[in-house]
Structure formats: structure tokens, C-alpha cells
Length: 231
Image (cartoon, rainbow, N blue to C red; front, side, top):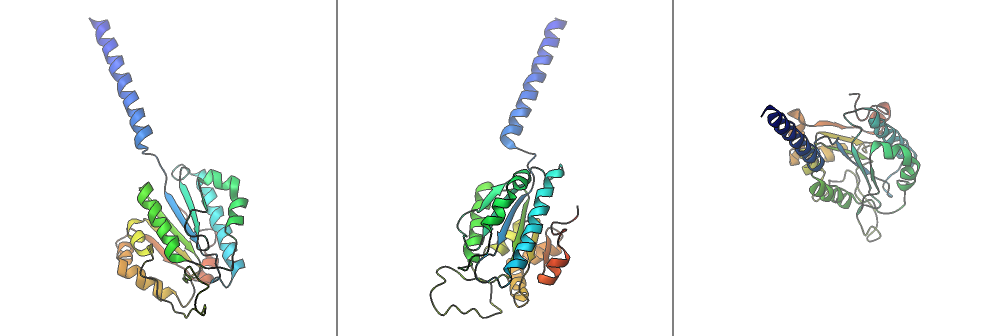
């Protein structure tokens, strides 16, 4: 009788362990943060060299996430404003450390449209599909929209420019835990803040639910190396 009890107990334990392993495999409870990086690389960028310096530093910080247990399984998606309807690159911090040269080539400046509507809509579409538990957002660029087709009209953009109503950044920021806006044009900061305020994102930040900062070019330069924070 005792041997049957021991056998039953061992079997029950094995089933429990197998069920837990299966639940983890299907439920995936150990995933790291999900980063969406939007990089403005179209014709609105007046300092492409400075933009690339910021991008290189940010990519360097993202690769360092592989060294920390809490972030080594992070997912990184990069979208550019010049090619906004698809993800330019996607992978883990480890993959980014191996493919960094390819990523830098893919985000180079292009004298073409710079569509923030489509870029942030691409983020929204992928958030709806992947439903990340910890959403973190970064944008590098002046926050100037030059939507497709940008060869129509006189091509002039007057600043400050209101953030287009269809830009999804504000609504996404309400769902996010982290938001950094880097290299924002000096004439655009108030426009961006108004956009975030109207979406409820600044209230989200004031409540402590969103780690938020908006930096012009000077503040961005002074924070290179700690854009993602030091924790």
C-alpha cells in the first residue's frame, strides 16, 4: 500500500511539473520589456549627423540590456519615418549586438517624406498584435511630420507644427511604462506636450505610471549613455 502511495505521489508531482512547464511554454511569463523605437530619417532632419550619433548611442544602450537578467529577453522593434509602413528591424538585445552594422545602414538619412502618422500607426498595429506586458517607447527626431505623398504642394513646413490628430503616440503613451522623445526641435516641444496632454499621457506620467522625458538636441547630447535610465 505504501509503495502505491509513493508511486502515486511521484506521478502526481511529475504531472504537476509537466503542467507548469507547459503553462510556461504557452503562457511565457518571463518575457522582458518590448521597445518600439521610431527614428525620423526623412527630409525634415536638419542635422543627420547628430541624429545618427544619438541613434548609435541608443542602439549601444539597447545591446547592453542583454547583460541584465531583467532585460536580456527584451524585444526591440525599430521603425523609420522614411519607411514607416513596416518594421525596419526586430530582434533581441543579443541579436542587435550581432547585427548593429546592418541596423545603422537601414536607418540612414534619406531625402524623402517623413511620415509620423504612418510610423506610429505601425507601432499601434504591432502593439495590438503582440500585446506586450511592458511597453516602452522612444522617438529620435525633431517631431516634424511630412506625410506621403510629400512631393505635392510647395513642400514648405511652418513651425511650430501641430501634431497631426491621427498620430498614435499619445494613446500609446497611456499604455506604456516608459517614453523618451529625443532631439525634439525647439519649436515643437510645446506642440508635442499639448498632444500628450490631450491624450492623458502627462497625467499618466504625473501619477508615476509613465517614466517620461522630452529632450531637445542639447539635453539629448548631455544624456547620451543614460537614455534608457541607469537602473
